[in-house]
Image (cartoon, rainbow, N blue to C red; front, side):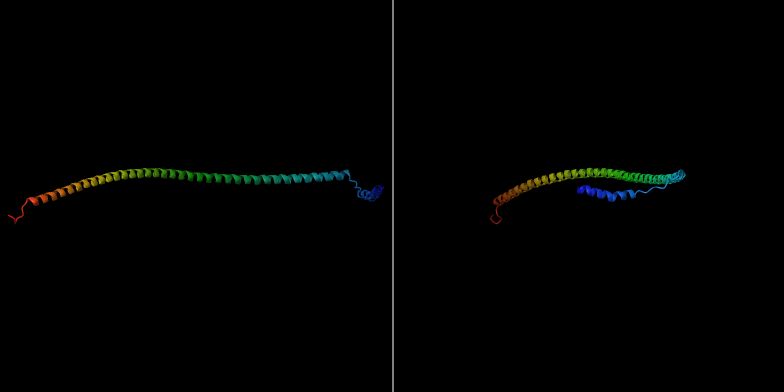
Length: 164
């Protein structure tokens, strides 16, 4: 029961407020409607003209930006080409350097090989000389011993001078 009473009270308070919020619009004649429509059409045409002008300006700006990008792209391609040329020049220099290093390596190997052969000959000659020297020393030692023996023999065979 309380709910129904509250509902009725609520409707009675707010229903007239809703009705009073609606205003009656003044009557507009057909002529005023046509004039307002023609003004709206003119405004729409002006807006279209401005939009077309803005669109043309935007297209010009985009073309300028595209032109700048094309210029930047061509500059970048030119710089990349210059860098590629530098790398190719460096490659040719490195190839020449590699060839020089290979030649130097061959020269070094040849020098080392010849040095080893010469060192081998010198060591062989030194060994042979040492062998001959040892053989000569042995022969001289033998001769020395023989000379001592002969000297002692001669001394024994020869009479002393004062004895005869």
